[in-house]
Image (spheres, rainbow, N blue to C red):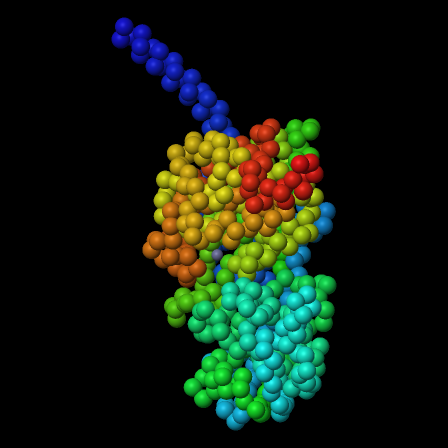
Length: 505
Ligand SMILES: [Zn+2]
């Protein structure tokens, strides 16, 4: 009796062992901690200066990735040069000097007012209050009706009439500037009433900025555009009710310059004669927030935002996945896409989604990897669990490494819509983010999240190695599975998906 059972146990054990052995022969099971550590030391090293978009450090990280893709046998697709897709940005530098007085009250630049756009100016002019400075033909609303603003400085309440939320107020900036310009005003000044402190606003809009170049954009603003904070000597009621407003305004003007950064793209052909025409798109952002005030709070001793967790971590997972998939090619083809400009608002991924090098309707899935950090090294997290029909594939992908799955951590953060996957989801491509294990933005996460201390020396390399293996294996599961991912019924991107792939209702 005893012997028989033990034989049976032995047989079962050896059976499951051989299944595991087979999986263990896959190249993702052989990723080495030493290699992974050296990649981290390079990508998140001080030398790359926080990989800020369009900086030299960012470019070096991109070249590092491209040279690996070449070595692994990936091709540079049409539209990219040596794996680089050029991404145009507009860099704008705020005026070096500016001054403003209203009815002889002297206002201080940055603390009392902030110039957000416009050329150099030096003017003495009349001021006029113009409601919200809004025109809407549909509702017959026109704040400029019966108002002569030619050659004057126009003061307005923030946003369109009735708007309270910051996004609609900030979203109306460009139109309001245009309207004032059309009316012949020399400057537009919005009165600051937003539900967060002025200092935050001034900090956000007051520095150098990078935005995706809008090639169709009309000529940049020819008038000065500013925001005014309340001061003890000048209330907003004063401005709204004054019979006369005298304004002195000067600014050395904004500088705008076209600069270029890059996404890195490599393509690996699949082995299945039919499925190879379908693509798994694997993404991670390589940019981070740079140095000094570019990045946030820093110290005298350390001003480099290394971004080891955010997102050298994901970049390395993508890099090792590229390696593993090239060593044992999956059925479907694979696109490796390292995007830039994530920290500036998902700019590189949205540029690629608008200018894809492989048509998006051939892309069956976008698997992104990114994260703020980790507090649970026994798990990985998924943003968008249960939404694309890939649960089982991912479970199979992470299980051999003993990792649990945390579904949609920190829901209040809206992480799905804050990660590069959303650039592709919006176009209809089923998309998820694979992230390190955490449940909430607790002290352990905040200790490193966008901090100068997010350095290679603080990384758990046993965990990162497992993370790389699990991501690679999950990608393989999806690339090989005959069933394509699909948006869950009722998902907010379901319609976009049907449209992209031409699925009839
Ligand atoms: Zn970040």
